Length: 391
Image (cartoon, rainbow, N blue to C red; front, top):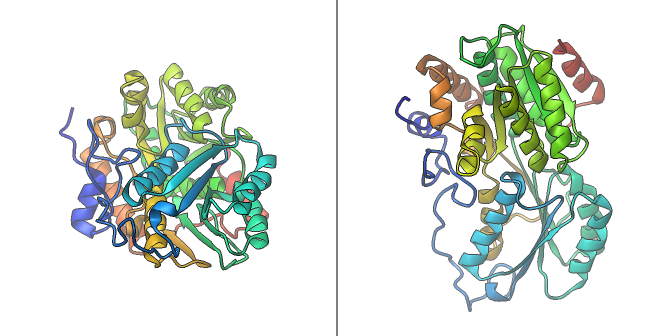
């Protein structure tokens, strides 16, 4: 097996893109949940002094609303890791509420915490919670809300919203998938077909999809993409079933973008002995202790530094620099998304392929390649993109 060299680190050295990357995880050079990003600087607001929130940070209550559940080895666990990191540094009181995929609990749950004087900041993520958060934020203008991976289009003055440019990171893994399916890799077949198994159909998920398609077709315009939506982010059995169905139709690599349900899609790839792409965390590294065979099938993951996002937003809130009412984005140029490069990646991709991926990533980061986005895209355009790649 070739000596491990991080694609992200290589780009950092050549492009200055990944200044946010931190210490490598055991067994790889990609960040794992709770450790990605620049090491936390010493707080400028020590406990006992007023913060940007007008009180001692130790008196600040922060609650995170998780749409599904912790334990997904991906999106939710990363979010929680960022909260825990901030709590440890600043002394916040924290609480995490898992909604088990029940959207009807969003407004009542956030309202309960907004009504209480014990909680100052409410955190939630994705477009699945956007409208509920806007409803509660309007009713409680004195409470602060942090929304990640969705845009507050109402521009409410007490919501800070941001999005990772998952379309950019997905462009890179789409290009990687196309390279792999058209190569002589051991598990590749002659068909130019790749898969995409998603959780619920929403703007953020479709943003992954359109980037994935564009990246794949940048490598080979003849690539076809099988697309399946599970309908939620919990049903691992259905995710596995959908992945296997795609594999039976010729896909030799499947991108699983489905939170905890995505673990089922990954399992399907292992069972059928094809390649997989993970999401949010470096899932091959995260899962290698519990299932080393599964990790060998996960050739890369589209990583989002969600833990950094949550931590940095809370740090800025304490310091009084978080732009409440604003919307921000973070993509390849800020090192906030990217393809995981580890020993599993290096075992499958050649140096020439890796260099091609570096070149494509550089072009996206510097704006030479504009990656399409599902944010603001009309349904006719989105459906046209999906239809254009059906086998």
